[in-house]
Image (tube, rainbow, N blue to C red; front, top):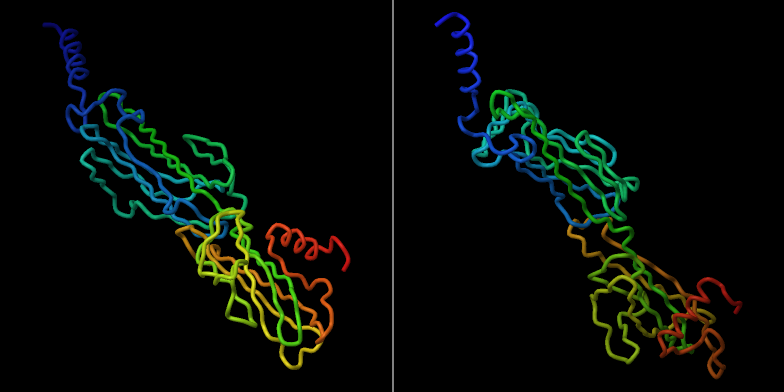
Length: 314
């Protein structure tokens, strides 16, 4: 055997004995995204502008895949790079992660405050760019690294996305109208409306002049109650003027509630107050506008809207 044959044999042996880490770990397409597993999730499914939300990332290798060295996992949101949750670590197909001293190696959570520009915006990252969606905040996870799949190492390219729904504005409004009056009794009628885009719960409506509120049919108004977006409920009541109130009497309605988002906090609450000045009809006098008793909710709301926004003069 001459020296040329020896060189050829050595070259053939080197190619044939290509090292896989661990041995026989190569899967179809190596590290081109098919040997990795991971995910990205928001901690809540629905939130508000101003809320602090958290992202939970994950990155690893599937069973029997090759190790991935120099692995880095990053998170991107609409405003750009958010955090690295893995930095130059080794991922093993057993689920273990080797973190060099001082390396970032944590599944989070990684938190940020939702701002108005983030809502509906797209997200860009080195591996993927996604468009925005109405009333949603989005995020992208990138996983990169080197998969030791044989003589020619392959690049890991792992991508995951996540989004959460944004409630634009939880909103409650209360309307109050004076009804029939006398020096000893003033009636009022009103309604509470969910003017937002999410169901409101634990709704409480109060009047500062009486603790008793009723449905239009005279049954007690049961509280707390819930209202879906755009829905409303009617109420009525009455109170006795103070001795010092001879011409007019003032009463204040307050409504409060919270939405159905699990994140809670101040952004989930809504409160609305309206103060109404009622004319007092003298004893033996006649009732004039706005001394009306409303039993038709639709007619009442049309009249209340007109008075509130001065559509007609009184």
